[in-house]
Image (tube, rainbow, N blue to C red; front, top):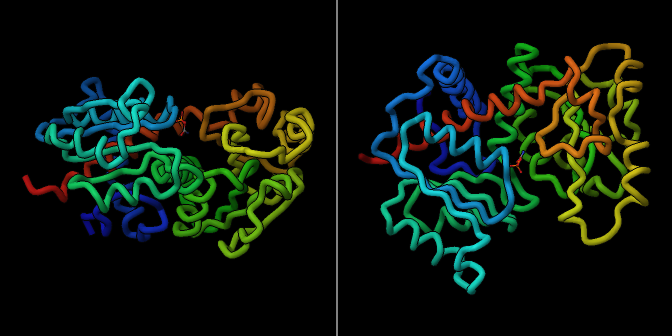
Length: 309
Ligand code: CP
């Protein structure tokens, strides 16, 4: 198979195992490209991409932009702050105005779950979801799974625990879909108030005990507490959260095996993870960021290949 089964990348839920294998194989080639002295290929010289960020981002925004530049696409960047969105313009009007500048592909981050899907049905361009509220963050899950594959050889049979604010996390949902499609076992761990009540419908294990979860796993993906999405208090204080669910060197060193530590960023050092763990040789946090560029090049390249030119 050398083309994706989907026309847009809205969520990992829509992808097949063959899609994931194709994205990883394509990312392998692009990873070689970005490690060469000349880190660029001319593949998308005729393609224009709009990066629309209606919500804050550092890694995802920069990573998409770099991936697009490495593929030689023309790009335009839009941030909601300082735009006419503040004057009441609708999402479709905003995007259609941008598309009238002959844009082929839109990368969008938006605070509303479903915004990327809505857009894909209402505009004449490819859409890549760069995170839609608490729903999905597909390229984050792809780069996470790719980084585990790179570190451990394969995902099949591996045990991955996702720790923290599962309730508000698009990274958790996309990771669960992605890891399971690749044959991994998934556990979620966190305070009861931050674990969705129906999570077991996704065939994941659940633990409220960090030490127990870490003893079970090969890989721990530590998530940020998303205070910006929390309308009520889900735990007494950040200090208490950190004492119960924060990963520190003492816990890491007490485990019976050496696990791999991940974090999608941005990190709240000293809350979900201490600095000595984040910067330790068990952490692959910066490899995740590096792999994000190759993964996003692969996704953009494969979707652009479907555009008639
Ligand atoms: N991991 C992630 O999505 O980070 P940003 O919010 O900085 O893009």
